[in-house]
Image (tube, rainbow over all chains, first blue to last red):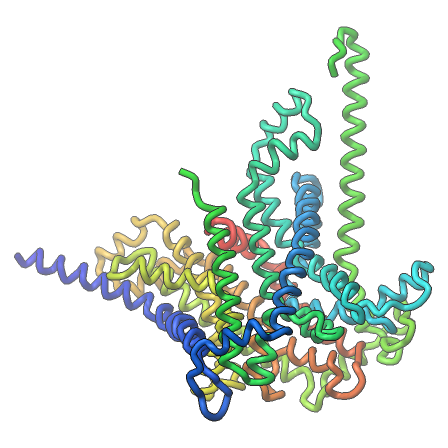
Length: 297
Length: 298
């Protein structure tokens, strides 16, 4: 009797202790994540200036989205940017991963160098690139002019098309190392024997790539692609810093437009409605990620 | 390949050809690697080279390739830039990063231990709730976060910004620390438990040492992410005294203090790159562990 009573209280104490250990985390997640999430939904149904009267407006914010030409332009721009930046990141990431795959001498140094830009902030890397791309004191124009590759200095960030291209270049530099590491993990998980027996059968590089490499690392490929797509859909820093949304508002991403509405015009209810749409897009992408990466039993 | 190799010497020469081809391929691989490595290093090197030109040369049109004179004047200009000077902003970024590191490590260690070693009601629900934070990026809940932070007067405080950063380190940290604790064999705690040690002292005296690699990984990510973060820092800080380093550097780029001082900007870029790079280079193994544990296994 004595013993069971002791046991019971001991397990109960363990339960309480466990709960206490996770309480700080649960409080943080509740206060800074769950509540804001619910509040975003709530705010999206209101006219919500930073100061002054708030008013319930029902679906008005959402209806306004359809009429907001800059919002539609930003959606279009963000998807176009995502579609254009993902392939070069993936292809160069794959080339780099293939180049650093084998543990030949000094390979660690090369892996580190390709990965270095990943640990630099995107904001800071944008500050570095906007200066390199400047028409007057930028190094790219200096090289182009010195090699006679251009008749005069190029305003890379001054025209919508070239602005998109050079921003993509800077983002590829900044993020490709991450994709490289993911794909490297995928490549290294493939046993060498598979390649050896394929070689015995006379398979060349492209057959091996098509029938062994790509199928066997498809989960890593899917992960690399989806993480890169999510990052691109959420992009802000590079546009805010490098083009300030220009030229002629052509590089305003979704997050940038939410930022402008919420923190420049202080139309926070409207910003919240746009955030809900963004959230929907991201939940769909993450759902896709979980579906692709599910364990096949 | 199909030719029958009866002749031993022909076989040997074929082997030799294959070996030479492999050698050539290896050299080609190194050549490609070196060229790519130089291209990848170029922006950082170029920024550094320009930061040590004299301020006049750093602003020269067209730019010079190599400094005609080495000077630290760009760094000196930063110390008084925008009246406040860079030291205050380095301090701001450091304080935010350190609070984020401390908070993330403490909460992730406690929470990871709780989720790994204890049974309690609603444990699975709570664990999923914490991890679900991964699905929803903070960009989409910044507006209410801002409203809340303003409401409790924590806007324009380094502490308020760090609280937000800690929250978004938690899912990764909890996931990683829970796995670290799960990897420790049960037997190690059992005798201590029978001796009547309290759970907290077991964690502190026994377990902490064993999960140290996990703690280092959580700390590195907390530091680098908070040091580099831009959007939340831009929104939550309106008082110039409280700007973190990236936000301060953006004010230089936007020419808020007059003409854009590109030399000083590059000196600032170097100052803000150094801590992340140093930590990454020194603790690369832990960083990569986190990348694999966080990205691939979940």
